[in-house]
Amino acid sequence: MNTADSIGTDSEDIAPLDEYAVTVLLVDDQSTVVEVIRRALAAQPNFYFYHSRDAREAIGLAERVNPTVILQDLVLPGIDGLTLVERYRANPVTMDVPVIVLSAEETPAVKSEAFKRGASDYLIKPPDPVELVARLEHHSKAYLNQIQRDEAYHALREAQQDLMKLNTELQRLTKVDGLTGLCNRRFLDDYLATEWKRAIRQQDPLSVLMIDVDHFKRYNDTYGHLAGDEVLKKVATAIKLSFSRPADLGARFGGEEFMAVLPKIAPAGARHIAEKLRCAVEDLRLPHSASTTAHYVTVSIGVASTIPPRNGPLTALIEAADAALYEAKKAGRNRVAVSPV
Image (cartoon, rainbow, N blue to C red; front, side, top):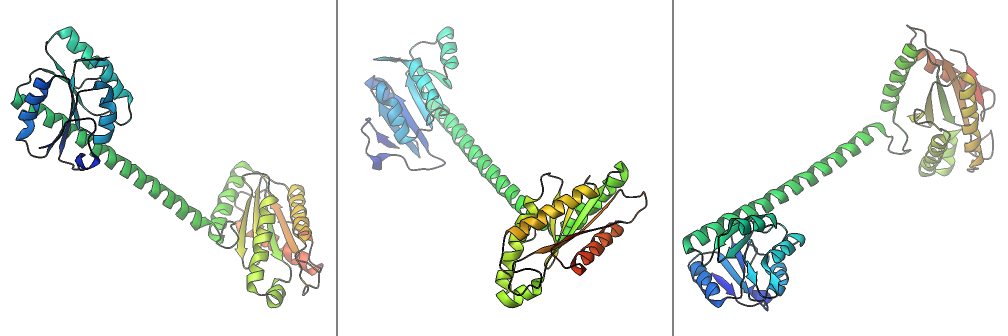
């Protein structure tokens, strides 16, 4: 057994972190009781014994030595023993440490009050050595097991939270285009199919915009593919900012082509959003010396809207938007065209 008799214990005397060690802190001002307990624990392996005669310093010593069980006299000079028990319970370091109250009398009312104030056990002093060791081991083991369970629980919770974050990121990656940050083609197809079915059920209008960056191959040939990637990012941002509703979806359709899905938007509203987007890209004034349409980057947009017939194919809506995009390009680019479905 290791011992430390005073509140001035040197740091090297502090018990090592051992999951099997019983670290006892005795708070008692009676030398005879201290000696009885010391002798009772002397032959016990892996016991660490600390003693404080000054109850006012007990909390500080407990914070230093990290006891796994506290033996606490009920009658102490300068402070009521049960008040000190309450202070243990109010301190974050000692709030869960088992406290065994030592008393010269076994009065039911006093025992009841001790347990109400936070005591874990109650012993008559001087305690029987065999019973004392058994109770110290029992409470210490229960306390250490609780710490291990708490640590395991916290580790599990952290692992679960990390897994949730990873799953969220994986879900995001499965639907996001890595370059532009818009939804990818796979998610676009799923979303468009879902909204098409919803529009059929509710007989609501559904609109799509097919968006193409004008003369993009020439841009790449002139400025390089990295500069072209930056253009696509800026156009994608303009697409995001053109929407005001959560249900509106912008996605990269492929290459320099984008698509927007606008649920419950009629042709006039879809054309307004498309024109707003066209102007937003034009206002970026991204230089494009190889363009035959303007001296800066522009987009052409095809608009298609419909209230889907009960058995109508989704491809009809996409083909109509694509046809409108073709008309916008044919008419000179940097414009919006609308095609009937």
